[in-house]
Image 1: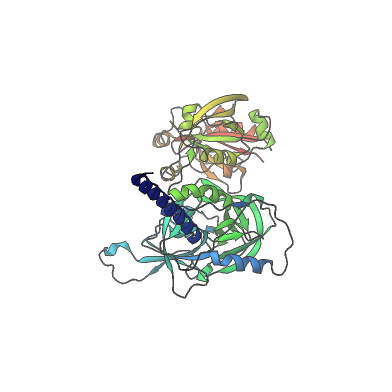
Image 2: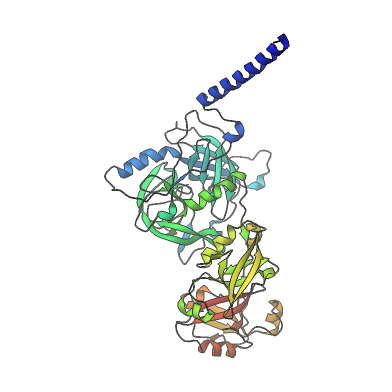
Length: 523
């Protein structure tokens, strides 16, 4: 063998040996490429049935094992992104609140900082907020509520058992207003390894199941409370018009608990504490709401990329589920389906031929149980996908194809609210169904841009506890009653009187310059 060949042989041999040694060292030191280290892994879900007994040490063990993975979050911002009531409207004296720390008030508190330097004095005082989060990946990834960090200029994280006054900087990787969730990452890592949470299966939870909440109420870090699941699928939170199904619990939750974990008896996260139902005189009254962890787990890959993409069909659905009488009136074989109350002009559904009053019973080959199921199917569909839908219209089944568009929450929430009109030239007319009507005047029709020769009356008042309260509101103009066009107040009252107690009432109304189809049951 020549000297040149021998030299080449040893060069290759040395290169291979170097690679082997590098692999061994890397595995021994647990080193990974930097790109992989920045990727948050989705924690596995334990879907095994909950079983076993609860003894004197059960909750003590859950708290001891999981508290190290719960963090306190402090934020600084110049202004709030949105008012709380924009998300959780009050009912009488009650208010659904998101929870911030700060002396028992759920609002972020202004803190004097002296003169602003180089920023102008018109920006207002610094606002401080506090909340909770939990570590889901040892790379420093933390889940919390979007409203905890929304608009924050600085985010600091305090760890369980850490030195007093020591906190770590964090940045927002991705956030989502619809589920009120945010993914953070520590930019300043502690020297000790981080603990991380395990995920349970929120679909397994049932009313009466024991749960534990760990959080930062009133900035009293790592407070533990215990209760049960009170109810499932409560439509709360989200953004205006797009409520999300939430877990309801009576585990004590207060301002500052936002973003903290709700744990099952195995110490697995099954929800993220998000809202409380309370009067304005106190905080916890035993009704709290948590976002199911399954919804957040499915969202993690998109949060990691910094943007959540959802599908939209361009419709609004009736929130009331179909009952036997309503289904029969539609010609449906059962009570499954979602009633379309509004179709956005030139939107995907409009282009596909879907109309207000249609009932969608199948979406992309899957049966539609109810309105919530349809919404979940649509938002989970990749924009640009064309899917078949089955609708019932005038007792007939139709097959249509709709191409899903991308949901733009900001544009959707920018849609104007309904504006009520109330002409006073005649006495209002009660209908006996909790609706009071006023006639349509030419001036009113012109101001509301009503279609020519349409509109029988404008709703001037709706009784709060009436069956119609969930379907219509003051300012709506009634165009049809039970699919019959109406042009006067007397025609509307006559058609409504034809409906027997227990039967559905179908209305087509003019609202915000668009036609809506709504339904309710006469008592």
